[in-house]
Image (cartoon, rainbow, N blue to C red):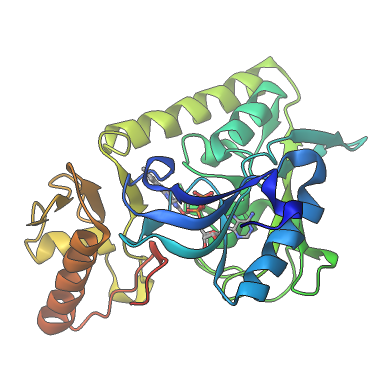
Length: 309
Ligand SMILES: Cc1cc2nc3c(=O)[nH]c(=O)nc-3n(C[C@H](O)[C@H](O)[C@H](O)COP(=O)(O)OP(=O)(O)OC[C@H]3O[C@@H](n4cnc5c(N)ncnc54)[C@H](O)[C@@H]3O)c2cc1C
């Protein structure tokens, strides 16, 4: 029986697959979706409950970078979706700060900036997932990383204190943030933007947003369930991970219901009924081949949640 303090927003054995963009995975042993108004207190209660029960604690954003274990997550899963507010703080000058609560969708942040005539966040248009997840992953697309536009992040640290870090702290890198390997709960992030000065610039913002969205569509991002790029791009290899998979002739390779996208070497899609085990089989096959035949040690970008590799 759940403690009274958690019953209003926590459920047991909640299926997760439908929440994830991959449509894969089992249930959360404890799933919490606290409302936005009391999120901080409720989130702390959830994390303490996980500590008390000695089970893992996992913060869920848009579940767009995850391959959730077939056995589910045998711990406490805290859903940040209710933290969905986006606002803007304008300076007197040419700049503005867009503040996104952690559960706000990246796409919504881009559209918000566009509608407010703010430049610099167009690259988030069409990026699946939430601002919190994008900060955690230091998401990168169209040659821009989240850390390039970040002003600050507000989060709950491991001692239940609300802290703020600025972009210039240590720990940011390619697909790397200071939150990885920690048990912090990201609450919101502020992003730097520049005000459009005239109608022409407003139209340019919209044109760029539309172009980025169209590019994702064209690359087949939304055609099948997936978790985006499977492997990080290592510049030292001199080619993208997608090109490496192509060179290995592994596009179209299948394991159960999972398929390496025939049109994109760095995407694994759920072609119907895929399991996490199927995805792992493909990931391991690509890693083995890349190492054996090319000497490249590919590093996973997708996170296998809930299962020890
Ligand atoms: C079709 C497709 C295209 C994609 N394209 C790109 C791309 O171009 N570039 C790119 O970088 N990624 C891409 N991705 C991956 C993904 O969209 C991003 O990494 C996204 O920012 C992840 O956010 P999320 O909210 O879905 O995080 P989740 O998948 O829910 O979680 C990812 C990690 O972040 C942690 N996390 C999430 N929210 C919080 C929080 N509030 N506090 C603490 N930790 C948190 C989770 O615990 C987990 O460890 C793509 C995915 C898909 C499906």
